[in-house]
Image 1 (cartoon, rainbow, N blue to C red):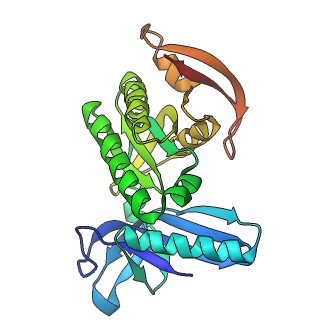
Image 2 (image 1 turned 60 degrees about the vertical axis):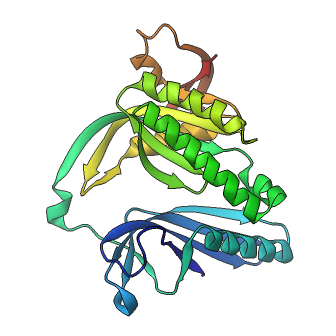
Length: 265
């Protein structure tokens, strides 16, 4: 399985930094993708790379082996265009020590998930060079709005962004601002927001709240901003933001059903 490590400003010979890794593998007519944040320890041949949390995974079914081969080649080329270096060794999931696991802090935040709709088709249409430029403008626009709304970027996932806000109103305002900004790039996004507690351990943020936010975003269509009932309940005093009932939904892998609301206007 070809693996790629993001180099960026922090080069591969530097120890003790966090980065991002991608894995691409083709089996028959399917392509398996795996990606996530990693921690790099050591340098040179003795370097070790660990997933900082369980990586995200995706299976792309291409219909034929030739299409899958072409998709895998394009995915690998795209990684290299985004300043990733080939990574030969394994990526292990680091096990937390008992001492570190006890150093936990609880926090409450509004979680925002942004995802581009139809990004694979768009990338195929534009080609790698043009798509790389579009993505550069996309991330710049998202980060500009996050800074204006005092949002905190947590991680980028493929063509998505996960961020947190202290106040739900700021998260919603940021979501609508991002929508307007990326439309000028010919992109449509779906956005989901959820408010809940998460755990901070060793500088990492983990918890069911992040998974719920991701599932809320997955229910949104192009151009929609959906929020969970937890967000709406916190917004009762914010009369300037209007919501439309989006119904009760079963979120994949999440207990019970959740009522979702669409941000209007």
